[in-house]
Image 1 (cartoon, rainbow, N blue to C red):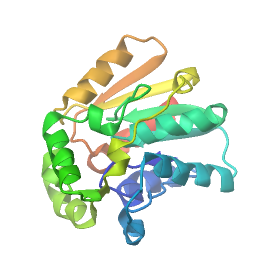
Image 2: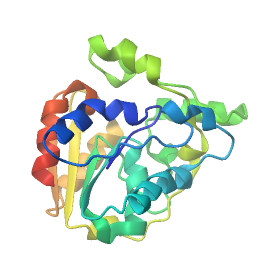
Image 3: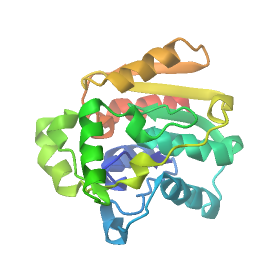
Length: 229
């Protein structure tokens, strides 16, 4: 199960989905409410809990067990919430250049100061979304930037401001992995990597590319996901 980051949708995973399916795996890359092909569902009040529920719905109705759960970027907050609900069903959890929230954290607490300023500005104006960050800011490879920018959509603002309630379910999952995109400078993700490197229950990898690893290096990402499964 591949969970996308902010401003993205299931479309971002297509190269990895194709590679995993070609090797015989069942793959789900759901798009969260209000984004991508579900942008027409945008409305006030779409929050982190709803995005967690989006993926829990896939898990329930597809009868999924013993799966690899991957969260990219903001998706680290989503999969941390999913772990609270179905930890026993998760075989392996993977944070892909992602936030690792603690109890009481919101995404707003974890993003870099420049992004915090953008979110707070949107809140002050009473807006229901955070404007799209362009692909160049994420260091996406140059040939894919126009494609990514054409599909990225504004992020529902309450997904960034809702605080998570976590009880440590994530830590109880036996297989935990952090993948850092070393071509994307980011203080939050550097801190997350340092934190898990100090914990022997985590595996860590670094991929020399931009933040959207699934777009920049789908071959290497596919290899890692099969390895940690």
